[in-house]
Image 1 (tube, rainbow, N blue to C red):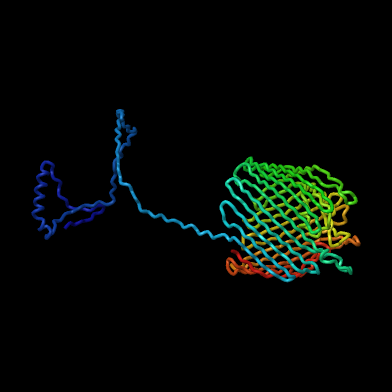
Image 2 (image 1 turned 135 degrees about the horizontal axis):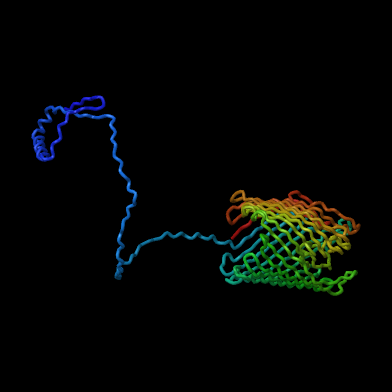
Length: 575
């Protein structure tokens, strides 16, 4: 066993001397043999004492080696350029054809629900009211479509005696589709039965039913051609109309109309639009007169510095009969008119806020047909003229919010010649004459509307118009309203129940009392309607409607009160 002794600064141990070099090899072999011989004994006995000296705190210092200053560069001999030779061999590898048995998933086409081809609605209510709506169409067809329809509304009684009415309409239409164009046409027949029930009831002699009865019949045929390739530079639509209207007192009017609407697209933001139409009218009453109106509107549409601009004119030629002071016709007179058409539009905040302004004018067609639609209680031989809108300055804002809320507000100032107003006839107060201001009529209008539309389930809206007239020779703008308000809504509260309602108000109406020539201010016309419909299945439903819930005796025209509270029930079927 080795023993150590420690001296200050070092440890000492006795170590054998180093062998000389000349006999080193022999001595090593000799010692190796001895070690092998006594290995087992050395494990059992004690080891001879040996001493080692361990020096503490000794620092080993290595000599500094000089760093070479020059960089070692390797000189490589360039390899000899040897031109490479390539050998191409064609290999023909024949593999057996794969015939995988794959069954890719195929989505089944959704079964298209068959289109309903027919519809019938029947209803009945107080005042002896009846209702019928019916139509039948061809359903989904690739090359054609056709349909027929029938509408009937009538009341045997009204707010006063002899105030019943009946409106009936029957029609048919058809369309033929090709890749290049669509050809369509239609035929409509209307029959309206009215009574002149606004006669003087204070008189002892009440008019007979025969003298108060009025029947208005009309027929209209139309034919149209329209191209289907909207991506082409040129698009067009051509129409032809032929019709006749007559009443029980042998007054009639025949009309032939032609119209054309075309567009030539220059670029994505510019185009030239052309509208033109021709109306030829022959009216027969106590005498026969011919009237005509031809209009053409070329308009250029383009973009300019963020504005959408359209500019053009309307040129027209009208032929009207001249009337003597006695009321007799004395031939006809032709007039040429030209009116400006200029408009600007700017998106202030995308489509949510759009500003627009412009000025336009033009001739507005007025016929016996359009006048009877506004007032069916006309007197014989009323004087009709086309309306001349000299100009209309307008300015407004509009927009669309998330595709659901649409709004529009606009103010306009117009100047018109030959605007028609209705006054009660001096001969028979239950009939109406048409009068005109001898000078131009001024009209200021503020219109605003907002419509919230969520499709078939929810729809609501409001419309309001304020109108201010300025007349010179006429005392008042007879029977023209100064305010009109409409509020409507529809809500499907479940799969089987649909509710709808409407409130309508018209104010500022004034009539002329024929006997005294005094102005009669009519009470504001207010009408509140509600309707509910219950769907038993997809094909059957029942409804309940309440008209004039406020039970007002409204008068649109002087001496003509409307029905009060009216309730109607009915059912419908789709097949």
